[in-house]
Image (cartoon, rainbow over all chains, first blue to last red; front, side, top):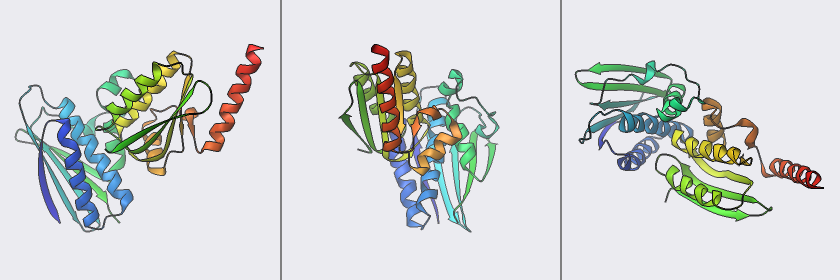
Length: 135
Length: 125
């Protein structure tokens, strides 16, 4: 199964995309606990891009691709925001107020919940490959 | 609505917010608003009953963290009871929430509140 959706850089567009993601994963028979963690990974990745990824106030689109097969789920997030590799963000003290404001908790969650991950800057896009075992 | 918040009163100066649904980017602002309303009253303890919460993200953690900070600032407490395993897992990973304020069930929480009440009563005698 491979499916793609796009959303704008607005937090209001997040819930329908996460709902779509859940529906696709459930439809493919992925266990509820894994579906919940993938929803969380997607929420943290996308909300971070929406909140911190753009220096301007124009509309941007973010592409979400879901690929299920071979005992794994691959989630790909592609945005045209400022270059940022969330996988390289250092381990952070959750009680540092700057970390809290900058979305450090979310990035830490994302890093902790994936089984494998890769980041590439492709042209003017950040592309985040997030893999989670589904079996 | 993906988060329902039910306000329950029991002990004096204690407000319980029973949450049902998801605590995330979408719903954290409504919890913040509800906590603000509670903070405007005479309250020493806020209890978040998490039995019905099946999902929490960093945005939800932020709302609980802010409530704990606000209650500490007024020498009160914000306590969390009965987190489901997937929610406890997030608490364990991020460690934003004060672990001493997390109770595995209502019986343990009641014991703690009883003891707190006894201390307050003794203190005022």
